[in-house]
Image (cartoon, rainbow, N blue to C red; front, side):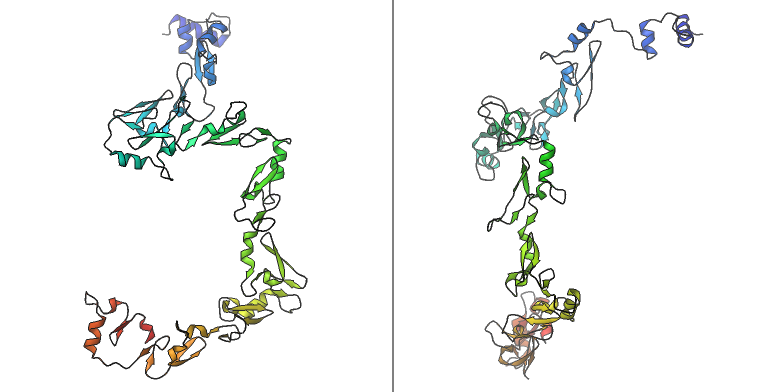
Length: 433
């Protein structure tokens, strides 16, 4: 049977508010919030941190108790929501260097380790030389000249204990971000990372000290390239103007230019014609990596005359023949006709420049070693000679055993198993027989 108080409360809930409420403990058990007996001022007094913020600005105050609310990454806890797991010091990318636990914003180090990030061992087994080697940056400077080396780990010099000098090798110095006039980091209009200011929208300068006179929306609009990228991903937007990252400046513009850095002249290499030793076959101008052809010429490289009855594709196909490239990659195709290169050198010939008699020459320029004739890039050897360049004589004045003994390696394998033996010499390509 239900207790009289519980029965009365249930009837009150069903029939209306006329019946008196039950005791506070019973209301809490039923999920009904009990009325706060503290005044608002008393409640907030209990929720305030020494700095004056209510629940550290990370929660709401209910009857003198902070209810923490996570509005950013991390885990908040503590009576006044003052603890945050993600504010502990890190070393080499690890919280508390992997040698401790984060407790309310401070590292509690494991046994045998100390330091604000638990990065220093209490006992060191390294020699001073080895320790210093581990503390050198990429320029071989110990702790970047901004700290001291302790057992292979850098202790950065922060005289005011402000943590502005940091990094595995003390390579980051955020004092570089402090504005001389205001004394603020990035003049209060940006974030500092490793000595460099990253400004908020509408601000620019080395220390975010200058304000743009146009809106952030207008800045983005002016810097957006036709493909929808800011400065074509090739520059930096400052107050609506792109500063292009010109890798190899040449001429008046440099390789990368344009209002939104949309032009990359490095792409002109794709339209360079080595046969005419010019861009766009000598019949056009390379602009933004594309050929603007002179009147009477067309094609990707301005290689095709308008007077030709064939299309660009038909012309290239006729010049290609059985090769994978037009004119076998050894000449220029114009209206289905190949002009072989280099000009005046009859060693490259054929309808599609398929013959290259230069392949018949040895290092001294002798054709087929003087023991054969060249036919379309291949040697036809005289009797008694063989090889790709007719360089081997079939005559031999030693026995087979003598020949083999000179071709065998220390393990007894003939020519290391990668060739054939002839007259005491290894011929590495058996196809030459």
